[in-house]
Image (tube, one colour):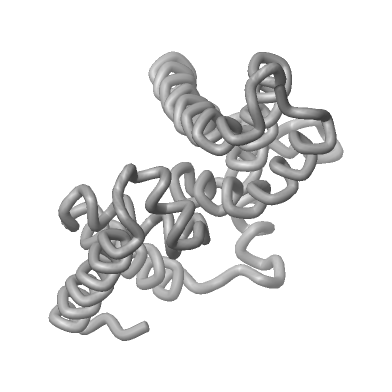
Length: 188
């Protein structure tokens, strides 16, 4: 059974990686933070009686399930509601004018041009598309090593293979991504 100290240290050690992984999946920092917090709470509530060695695998599974739950809830909500209220900012007269709100957003500092935003979104879609086209084991190793920042030993344990296999999968993934992105004119 893991002690409170062990659970606390484990959660501190995975917090940033879990957040980065969630942001990658849901592309929304607030939602990613909620997913990670919910996952941590579930781990503490339901699995604190497990040995400390089992916590990493349990947490990964909980985090994956919480991410899937997020997408299910969002799909259901989007099917049922249209959220024009997301833009709603009532004026002094209590009336809402979408055009005024959009003009205010365009005039605020820190906004980027539509062209820059579109180019960035297209580049991210291309990268995401190329990552999705990698063979499953290469994609898994690549995301664990470089997105979740797991070390080789952790990745090998999570994938159920040797450390050498992880290194090989990662190397092949990086080469394939580099070649595919260069062919599309994307240099990072």
